[in-house]
Length: 316
Image 1 (cartoon, rainbow, N blue to C red):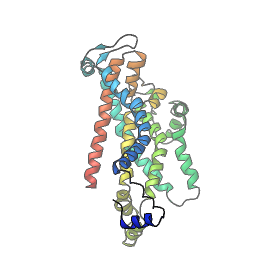
Image 2 (spheres, rainbow, N blue to C red):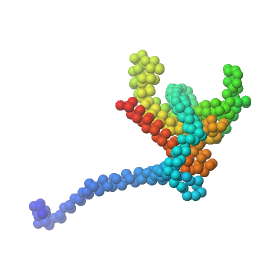
Image 3 (cartoon, helix red, strand yellow):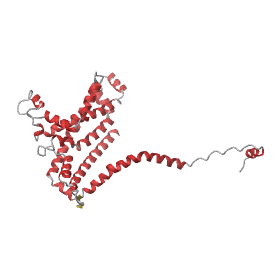
Image 4 (cartoon, one colour):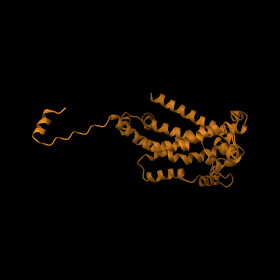
């Protein structure tokens, strides 16, 4: 319906004003925003699906079959998992995995946190020492294993030469001894990893409010009390992340042991990841190797969930 103003303009011969464009429906804006969001997410999700989700689902299927890669897989149900119950090598690998994780996790966390606290001070050359501490993490694992095997040499290694200055009697055999091989691997693993986690703790220390430290100092708190009651609670998010990462890394340790001891002597350092490698790529029992991998997968999942629940209760 024409308005009186429009009739007057038409009577006077003036041009009619243009109507404002109609607004697009709100739903089209939401659809466009959703498409933009999916455009960013889809490549990452596609990569996750192709490189992670599909292999994991395939792993579960192969664990229920007998397959030597050269023929068709034969469905065996839960036979591979039943075989694990009586497999002594699997039991040894499982025990060694927990042995490595039980020592490597706390030692790495304590060493990396101590190093971060030290290098967080205003020291001359702190940037240089941070680089030196991080360097082992980016060093070739093969070079690390060769050098440390030379250092651990029972007869000519400098470590035993140094220990003989203070300790008498028989020196540790390190990588050639069933009793000392795993401690030697744990020492090297901690030395190699602590630089990376030191950087994470250093980043976390930058978020600790200086006002809280100053208030605690004014109240008469000593260095240990300030660390325990101020620094450590403020580091809880970083501590939780580091604990989860180092735990998963400890249960999945493979390359260091493979090049340093190859699981020996005997089966003293055989862990689950290497046992999976042996069964799959040396003995071509991919179905059985997949069953061991499923066990390792659920161990990592259960430990991670327990850590999440514990951290959530602490935050509540």
